Length: 173
Image (cartoon, rainbow, N blue to C red; front, side):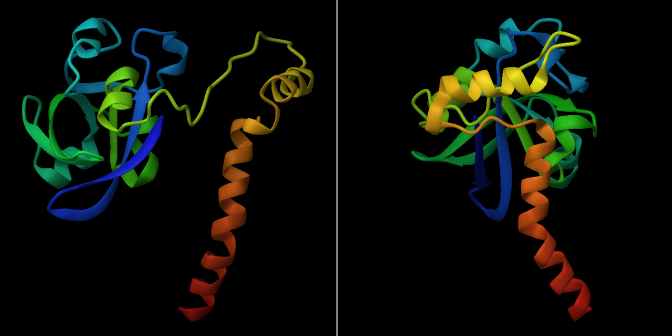
């Protein structure tokens, strides 16, 4: 799940990424800089519905430390979340301008009222797999309810959307 939220007193958007800390570590491209190492012991974070991991960028911007509580807007209003770790400035923690919060998938689902809806599923292939064949079979399986694309496809889609805006800003500058 990916959801955009805000702090109650600030209009800046924050990206909440739901992660299955108990799943395959291959899909956990982040490093803890400070606080609990959820990659080594994910159970304590998975059992805390208010646990969040925040980016170093967000930590510095908010002045938040491990152990602090921060409020985020949820569909039910402002809610306090407990900072369990601060992430290094790389990978997921640098997406969305560093305005990133990671949560255990089930806790995020409950907090943000997603009722089991999924935004993205990452798939890893064995070395030498027929990428286009796997992509075609996945697309057939999900039908019109989802889009199957390689990670580069998301970047190309975003570039197609933001490219004209960037060009207009360059001309205006």
